[in-house]
Image 1 (cartoon, rainbow, N blue to C red):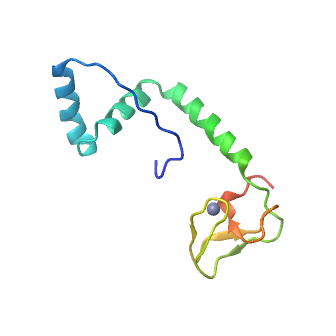
Image 2 (cartoon, rainbow, N blue to C red):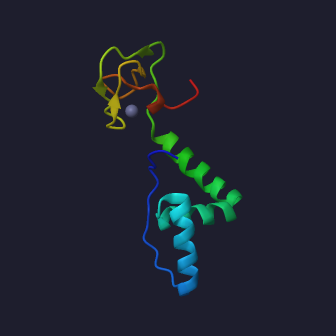
Length: 115
Ligand SMILES: [Zn+2]
């Protein structure tokens, strides 16, 4: 899924020894021993529709936070820079544009879609 912007929380669960052993074995094979990834994968697989709906909701909320692109300002970055919206690097060759409320060019992907 790449770098996730979703929040994480700690959850304590109680499991029988043999269940933990089985889970650790599976986590070793599937996720290099990362039990968190394995449990996450299990729950997502068992709740596909619900999880999909939740992710869509989170993504919609993220989209609403993005600024509106100023028309006809799209271009390809010539130099590496920093995007003031997401604070990540703009690499040479990335699509960039100007956006309402921002002095400098930002990632095109950091602008709201659909205009
Ligand atoms: Zn950005």
